[in-house]
Length: 274
Ligand code: C2E
Ligand code: MG
Ligand code: MG
Ligand code: MG
Image (cartoon, rainbow, N blue to C red; front, side):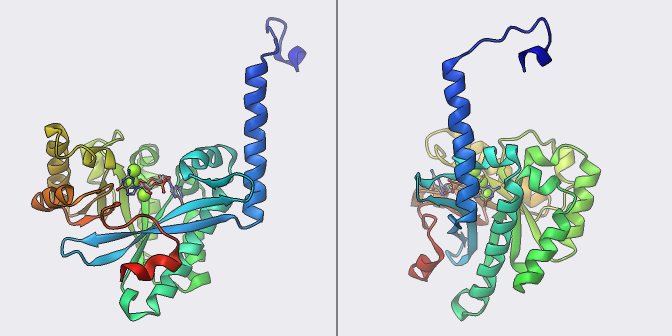
């Protein structure tokens, strides 16, 4: 290895780095095993409109590891992106969320509910992504009009024309798009208007201190106005109290999601919200 790296390469043993690499390899192996053992599951967090009616829910993946306990997606999504596991995991999430849509469609109280699914950059960029969405819909029989895909700004910046073509192919199926964590990325405004987006999601970092930080209030108000002027709906995430909800509602924000309305829960607990 050292020889292959070249004559001028200094190779030394760093125990800390070594330990880190071993821990990571172990984590990745546990993820693969956990996936095979069906340890990955979806929680759902409700989304409500300005009349406090539940419109649907966002699917949020959870890893209930027999070995490690409950593992947050913040700990494994970026790793899964790097090692490619996001492809089978992302497809599992898409299909499970579509199956949940069908389940809700069969009950009057939830028949019109939508499901929002987070899509990672690598998953969206894959050549088969459009086919994979079609497959999830066909396999489950879900109504595409009730499926929303959440994308983030960073994944849309490269190959803009190809991205738009791909989004349009999926939109033609009836599926709609939300731009997640809006305001934290680098989208230019001229580019935002080109994307076939139905909804902007105000990032929770602007909602957190909304009541005390005037800058956050200005940003939230501006995002609502921007979204509306581009013909999009605007939803706020991370709403934790009535005062935040009321201020956002006074800014004409269309919908809300956050602990104030409900934490993410396994689907069997969803009836508690009805
Ligand atoms: P996100 O899509 O922006 O999801 C919102 C995150 O905020 C969720 O964290 C949710 O539990 C949390 N949250 C919701 N309401 C509140 C609130 O009122 N206060 C606070 N402090 N937090 C709130 P979670 O479930 O840990 O997910 C973290 C991120 O992991 C997600 O951010 C998303 O980017 C990613 N993720 C989750 N599930 C999936 C998935 O199935 N596929 C992909 N590619 N990414 C996923
Ligand atoms: Mg999301
Ligand atoms: Mg978000
Ligand atoms: Mg977020």
